Amino acid sequence: MAVIAMLVFMAVWERHSSPVARKGFLSISTDRDDRLYIALMGSAFINLFWLAFSGASQLWGS
Image 1: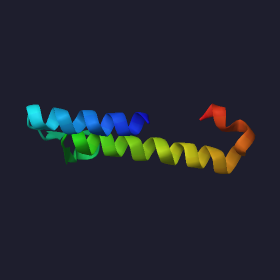
Image 2 (image 1 turned 45 degrees about the horizontal axis):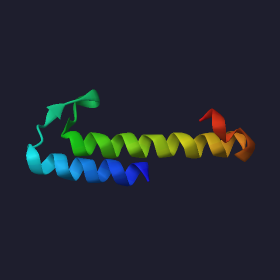
Image 3 (image 1 turned 180 degrees about the vertical axis):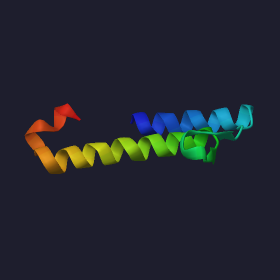
């Protein structure tokens, strides 16, 4: 539910102000939508790796 809320908020924000591309970490030019996508994918992969190496009983640690 939180991911859907973030995507709706970003769509509304995009309508009101145009995104500005910036040089970020690793010198990749990204706007705020790209950075949100990268953050969501990074969080998902961290959780999947944690689940793979520690088991379902230790999911709270991720």
